[in-house]
Image (tube, rainbow, N blue to C red; front, side, top):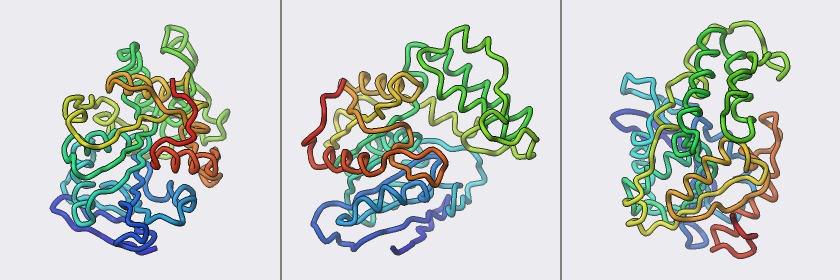
Length: 293
């Protein structure tokens, strides 16, 4: 693996390349991205593609990538332009993008349609697209408020409670007592931080994003909206279905959950072997996939 830093006016973008460039198999490189997850989250999945040249990177202001624009917020448009800067030197890529990275990737295809040949957008958290969008926005604000008042443990406990809630956010959700961080194995004491990109409002522009349907339809990129089989009834499963519907397609089902491509290094292992196999099938054109719905 080789590590490179692309220096732009707004950020120094650190990215890793596993395998040769130009690629040995003649296919585009496979670029794996997340948000706020950085390159460390794709080590297990990249290892399932030893025959491919795989790129991973740290988004602006996260991991090893420093920002020089004086801002602390994260927007899909800015991150899409960062990706374009990295891809521009390589030529088109195939892309697997998860969570906020899937939102960035949809913005990338809309803004720079020649950059990506196939995009697998896994569980984009576009909360305003669901029928209960206003309630989802309220639930998101509740996570931010818990974090602002009591720190990381309280904020993360609220985030887990929100993302594990099944179905729409009803009055029953908002009537619950504040979750106890200790019940999730998290510290109850306030750590003093308030800048977490997941728990603060710094990434709200990502979950508020509305894809440019016309631009995506005009692009030659093959766009696949993916969802984990264990996520179907929770928030990111519902946002995935809503995104697919907006684009006039059905979701493609992958193994496991929102982090289904992870080993156990982040505490909630997925099924990376099965996930990697499904991703290979989808990238190869869909052979062997079960029916989507």
